[in-house]
Image (tube, rainbow, N blue to C red; front, side, top):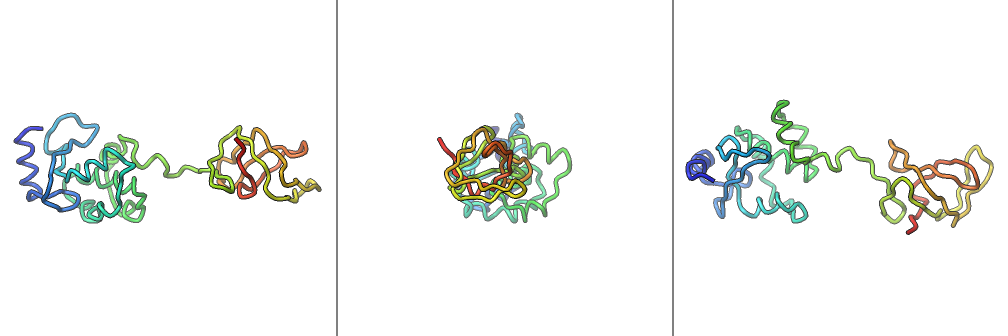
Length: 191
């Protein structure tokens, strides 16, 4: 990073992290996917926060308490990083308060942050295992099948299930030759 950019960022931020407000261990972060290290593309951030940006599995929500202030920062790159981290932390209350124009929102979403799990319907069995189309499951309880006048017995295998796309609590499959909808809480995924 250029010395000029670093100096301008320190002047802009008062030599503090633009996310947390700390004045220790500061580095310049070029906000992806921008490639030019200009002040309008960078923020001054504490190294531990930058490490968490680069390694999402190390995220510590307590380190990001400053987001409720930084999201209102007048500098767009600070807003972009704030939006991305709020999305990663799934803080929808603060995200709903934020406003980014169309171009800024496109920049914020450019890394795919906030799109991974948001809005996705995840089907899980009774043990919390993720189910997918084509999986095999076993019923863990006798189930009365409405409209078919039979009981699907505990232990019955259901092969090649289909996920109900708009309801995480339901799958479809064949039991005793009948195509039925089954609640995921009553199935266990088989290997």
